[in-house]
Structures are given as structure tokens and as C-alpha cells.
Image 1 (cartoon, rainbow, N blue to C red):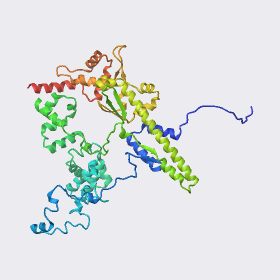
Image 2 (image 1 turned 180 degrees about the vertical axis):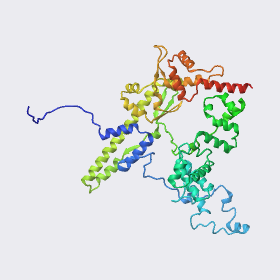
Image 3 (image 1 turned 90 degrees about the vertical axis):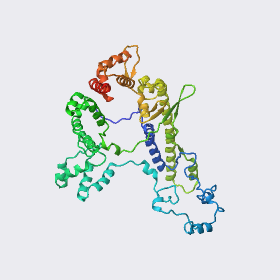
Image 4 (image 1 turned 60 degrees about the vertical axis):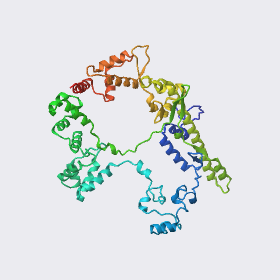
Length: 507
């Protein structure tokens, strides 16, 4: 069979992801912070994009008030009235000369510029070198700086200070020391006992419990600095596994105390900080702005609207485009660049408008389906999946997934992420019963456990039966999984704790 080259005409359909389409998809899943950064980046590259927050144009600045409008004097006060007391009489009565202090030849200068320059609202506080107090308010303390300042005051020898600053690198996020003194000494070429000596001193720094190697050592150091590390508390710290199991009978024998003292000791232990470095988080605090706001109208219906603070205001500056095109001397490359900028700017504005419409559609449908939750609480949160919302608004599930990612909605019940309303469905006890939301089931389990008494502590099987009476079919292992996820101890541990507290209360 001979091989030959032939030409065929074939018609087919295919989905092509254009750069503009990919940009629209990315914009849809961006949260407010990322979207603002992206728009600012695009505005730097595209001269036809105009980003504005208020009605005023970006290049318009409010006129500064003239110096004559405000001279620092209250006209209603007699102290500053010119006819109340002349300058010459004031000089004679006080035997002083104020000509140099209140000179009209130049602007008023502060008496202490090194201090007054820190206050931007005071005379002399302006300029390029002034300090903005808002920067101090928004800043968070750094653990390294906090420890470095103490090291400079604790260690006199420069060698010890260098070792101490090096040991800070071995702290984890909780403030525990995760290094081996022997290995550190070998790498640094110093004696191991020298590293251990510096480490022992570092454990006395603030916050209490810093540089501890274990939880028991961290709690022991905090109790020692509080002056509460007596033999009974030391025995309690050495038996943290018994504290976790609520085995009060063995704890009484180990500590040599009665029930009253033991419960007081356990409460004091719970007030300690197991993570000393938690207050010095390296991550800055993130403020969450709701993308959608839900309010109740007078008629009882829900009003869903987009948050104007999270809506980007992007316009195409066609006036500037017309002025540039009207100018002479434009090359073909310049015209091509302007046309590309106009196309990209127009596409971006349309994509942002489509993004807002899509978020509005998805949020409105979620509010319609979760009306019971908004009116009555988490017990009435119904199970929901992406397909249900996608079919209702005639969009793809992936689109709904991108919309609900990192988007927040403010309701009369609080601030929630849109994904909070999508929960797994748990079947009812009977076939006629509708499904229940997993979040509402967890809430019911927590409520059942909160209503326990020392005489009637519910086991996992009892919780299964109680849920079945409410029309919820749930396996015992699922109840145990939900209970452990909510950090609720087992029925045996809860019974021990409740009986111990009841015995103390009765005595």
C-alpha cells in the first residue's frame, strides 16, 4: 500500500480558553484584597483605566485652607482679644519680653521639634519626616524584637548575647525550643554547657514559658514565675495525661490533696498559656469585609445587596483617549498600543460587571434556600450543594464554586463565608423525613451535651437514640467523630468531671 499526502476539509467544534476568558475566571474567584491589588496593577500598565473611590476625580485635590482662615486663637475668648490687655502692659506686669517668642516674621516653630514632629496634627508636625501614629496602632509586636530587647538587658557578656540571639531561631510558632544544645554547640564551635547555661537563662524571659521544650516544662515555668509551683502543682503538671482523661481519683493520690484543692489546681492550670508565643503572631491581622449584605425589610422579605465598599470602581477614560488621538505625531505603534489598552480596559470593566452580577445571583439563591437559618438559627440550616444552586441560576457548578470561595456575607445572624451554607446532607430516620444539615446536627449534639447533669451523662449511643427521636439517623462512630471534632471529651471523662464538681458543690 503506497503512502500519499492528501488534504481534507473537516468541520469541528472546540472550546478555546482565550486570555480574556481566563482573566474573567480568575477575577470571579478573587477576594476583595487580591482584586484591589490586581486592578491597581492593571491601572499602572493601562493609561486608559481610571480607578476612583469617590465622585471626585483622582487628579483633583481639595484646596488647602489659607493661613488667615485659622490663626490658632478663639475669637470668643478674652485672652486673645487685642483690647483686653495690650502687649506693652503684659510685658510690664510680667517683666518679660515676648517679642522673640511670638514673632510674626515666620511660621510658628515648636519648642521641642524632636517631640512635636511626632504629632501630625500639631504645628510643625508636617513635613517629610513626620511620624504617622496610625502606623504604630496598626503594627503588631514581633517576638524576635521583644526577646532581643530583653537579651540586651539580661546578658552582660557579648558572647552570651550572640548565643542567645542565635537560639531564637530555634523557636517554633508556639514558642517552644526545638533545637538540640549539643548539635548547636558543635556547629557553633563552643561548649555544650555554655549553650545550656544561656538557654536556662532564656527560659526566665517574658512571656512566661518561652524556650520550653515541652508542654509540662512550659506550664512549670509559668507556675514558677507566679510563685505557685508547690509540690502538689508539680505533681499535677507531671501527670497531664491524667488531667486530660479527667482521672481525678488517681490525681488525688498523686498530688496528695482533696477534691476541693484538686479542682482549684485544675482550674488554675487551665488559666495558663500553653502557647507563649501566640500573642506574637507573625501573620498580620486580616480584616474581613462582607461582599454581600442581607437585611430584612419591613415586609419580612430579605433584601440582598452588594457591599459598595468591596465593589471596584473602574472606568475607561475615553476623554483622555480622544485627546491623545487628536494630537499629531502619533506613530503606528502608538495607535496599536492605545487600541490594545482600550480593548483590555473595556474587557476588564465588563468582567467586573459580570463578576458582580454573578455574585449577586449566587447570594440571592443561597438566601432564598436558607431562609429558615436566617429566621430561626442553625437548627434550621438545610443541606445544600453546589449543583442545587447551579441548576437554579442556570450556571455551571465550577462557577458557583469560584463565587463562594473567599466571599463573605453579612446577615442578621452574623458574618459567614458563603461556603458555610453548603453542608453535607444527613438522612432522616424515616424515608419520608427530609435530610438534615451536618452543621445543624453538630449543633444539636453540642446542645444535648451542654444539658447533661452528673446523674445523666449521655453516651454516644444515647446521643444516637436522642437524634433518632428527632428524626435524624446517625451512626455511633459518626457521633464520636463529630464530638471529637468539637473537642468534647468522652462520656466517661465528662462523668468524672461533673461528679467531682458536684461533690465539691455539695460539700
